[in-house]
Length: 167
Image (cartoon, rainbow, N blue to C red):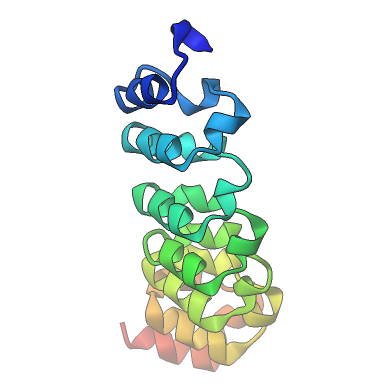
C-alpha cells in the first residue's frame, strides 16, 4: 500500500485529508463506500475511479451527481436508464442528457427538463423526438435557445415560428 498505509482507518484518514487519491488505491478499497465518499469531498471527479459495484449504487450515484453532474457519465448503464437518476442529473446540467440511455433520450419529460436547463440538450434527444413537431414546439417554448438545435427542416415551420414569437 502507498506510503506505508496499512489499516482501513489510516487509508480513510489519508483519503479524507486529500493525501491519497482514489485512483491510486486497489480495487477492493475503491469498492469501499466510506472511502469513495471521503474522496468525493475533495475531488468530485474521483467517482470515475469507484468500483463498478459502487457505480451501480443509486444513493452513492446521486451523491456523486450532486457533487458534480458529470458523474452521470461514470454511473452504471442501469442507472443511466433510471429516470429518477437521470432527471436528477439533467435538472442540474442539461448537457448530462448525453449520458442518458437511448430509452431516456426518447422520454419527453426528461428531455424537456434537460432543455429547460440547457437549450442545446435538444441535440441529444432521440431522432423520434427531433422529428415530432409538437415536441419541438414544446422544447422551443421551454427554452428559446433550443431553436438553434432544431433540425433544419423544422426551423421555418409555422408552428415553430409561432412559438418563437412568444419570446
